[in-house]
Image (tube, rainbow, N blue to C red; front, side, top):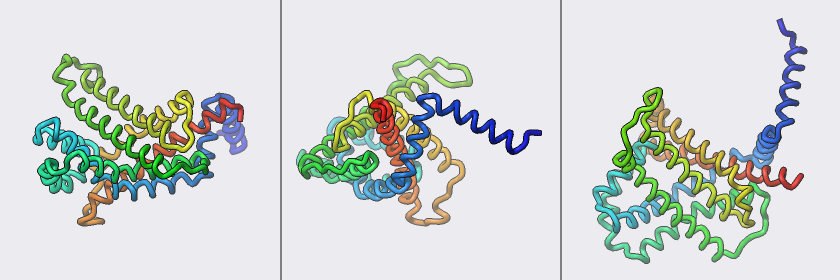
Length: 287
């Protein structure tokens, strides 16, 4: 039977081998940086700003899509998206989306710009979290930051619009079945969804911090963040569907609480990804 000393020696041996690998050192450095920056606290602020910004952004996206597609199609695709990702929000959204679509005719271009401008506060909050994680203290002028946040917000809305079109993919693909009962269309749709999430993470990591990083330094963190986000998204939706009952504890605000938890977990993946990108760049510079 192995003694405690033997187990300790084996652990030290495995630790030494792990740290000999570049990716092993990167993991350890990232974990230490996350602890130093109190990374678990930063997503809480992002969750708060998301609650203030998500509905202006959602109204702007609905207004934009409503000018292109029939109202029924917009509603169906949005409900489908939230039922898959955040089912507890569907009831709250269903009460408001119809009224939102009816109002889109009165929004006009300036109204849409105003909604995206208000909703861009979320991306300003993300940018500040990125600067804190990266140790960036040099500020940018207000108009530069706000314009940047607005452009990222519109870009994210357009990517969201593209992601809704992924629902039409099965119509154009053969219904082939792969091992374990997985369909070809499900695999392709998942890959394309992950690619779009990766693109969003790339844009955020590249342009939201006050000093722009190089593409070759941000892609590892963006890839990790995208994969982690997709895993958390699916696990959280599964958890809500199978186990969670926020209604028992939080009553009428259960959907809001579930939304905040989801945003917190998603924001944490953003922070982990940018910390990894930062440490990756430092290792390349020999720091």
